[in-house]
Amino acid sequence: MDPISYFQAIVLGLLQGVSELFPISSLGHSVVLPRVFGWDIHQNDDYFLSFLVATHCATALVLFLFFLQDWVRILKGLGRSLRDRYIDPEDSYAKLGWLLVIGTVPAGLLGLLLEHPLRSLFASTETAAIFLFINGLMLFGAEALRRRAPVRDESGIENDEDIAGRLSFRQALGIGTAQAFALIPGLSRSGASMGGGLLAGLSNEEAARFAFLLATPIIGAAGVLKLPDLLGSQGDHVRGQALVGALCAAVTAWFSVRFLLRFFETNRLTPFAVYCCIVGAVLSVAFALT
Image (spheres, rainbow, N blue to C red):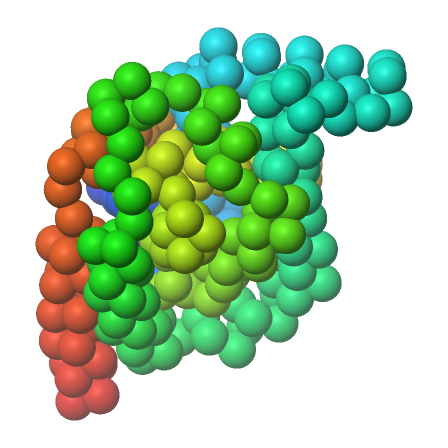
C-alpha cells in the first residue's frame, strides 16, 4: 500500500494552503492531524517530508504569482542598487528588496543549522499541541500590539512604499528572527512575522503584506532545496499524491491570501488566537490521556 493515500493527500494539501498563511502553524497541524485521524503518518518520515516539499513549493509559487507585480518592482529595485552599489533613499522598492533580503537571513541560517534538531526535539504530537497553545498566546500579544498600531487610509493598503518608508533594516532583521520561530512545530510563521511587523510600527494590513512577501523566498527555498528528495528514492510511491496535494495547497493558498489581505484591513488576530488556544489545550489534554 502507498504510505499516503490520495484522500490523505487531498486533506493535507488543503490544510497546508490554509494553515501556512493563516497564523495557525502549518507544521503544527501537519504533526497533530495524522494522530487525530488515526493515520499511520509521522512528521519525520522521509516520504512525508518529501510530500510536504511539494505542498510548500506550491504555496510559495502561489504567493509569488499573487504578488508578481510587486516582485517585479522589488527585483528591479535590487538590480538598480547592485548596479549603482548604493541604495537610493528615494528608491522605495530597492529598499524594500533589501529589507526582505535581511529579513530572510535569520530564518535561512537557522533553518540550515537547526531545522533537523528542532524538528526532532519538538516534533512529537504532545509538544506540537503545547506550542499551538503557546502560538495562541503569542497571537493575543500581537493583537494587543495591533490595537496600538496606526491605522492607514485605504490608499496605503496596497502601497509597498509605505512599508519601505516605515521599516528600518534592524527592524526587518527582528521580524526575520521572529519568523525563524516557525521552525518549531506549533508556532506560526505568518503569526510571528505579523507580530514583529506590528511591534515595528506597521499597521495590521501592512504587517500581513510584509509577512507574505517575506514568507515567499523562505518557503520557496526550503522546497527547492529538498526537491531532489521528492525526485529521488524518498519520493517513491508519493509523487502522485504529492502532485495532488500540491494542487490542493495551491488552490487554498490563493483564496487564503486574498481573504487575509482583506480580513486584516479591519479585523483582528483574536479569532486565530482563540482557535489555537482551544485546539492546543484540548489536544494537549487528549494526547496526555491517551
